[in-house]
Image 1 (cartoon, one colour):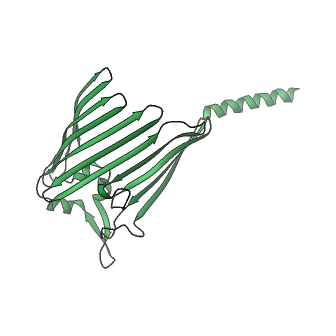
Image 2: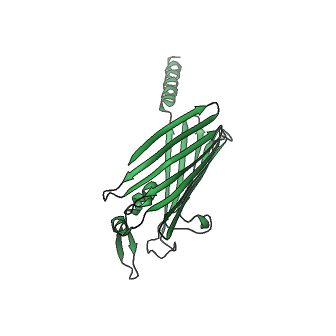
Image 3: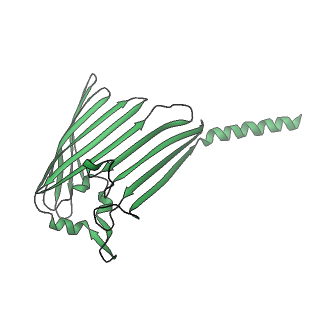
Length: 238
């Protein structure tokens, strides 16, 4: 995987850049997303680019589903688990892939950030659409809530928010600060895996995950402990 780098121009409130990515698999299948043009003005940034991929290359390399999809189990009609590998799919992947991608980012500093990414890919008679959206609140309503975020990534764009699809990911996260030295970040995520490969997400095909991160300013508490101990000693002397 190679980042092709690029050129960047900034003048007054305008920003512009040209960049790209290159990935080569062990079977010499190659994917290129270039050029990617990104332009921004103050709070708004928009981008667009082109995708080219040779036969024997899987477009999922450029999204977060690749690690899961490259080798996973599916349930056949007899209820038995079968290992499905991207190596088998790559061997049968013929024809060049062409497509394009775009992105949009709106950020009002200290208030909200809204981002979308879309990739539309064609290989012979097949079409693959991938869409991602995130909304992040940066405004601190009070001293206890530090921020929140909602995100979703889905392959079937037409049915977004209507039907669960294989590989779809969505979730939210938020932060709370019960004390100025304690911050708790909580993240909830759901992912759908079509284990029996029937095109529907049924019972047992939803993976849920909850994670939490607790940050404590130990230096402040240690200083408070030393102050308390000093006061105790002074009180005992009296």
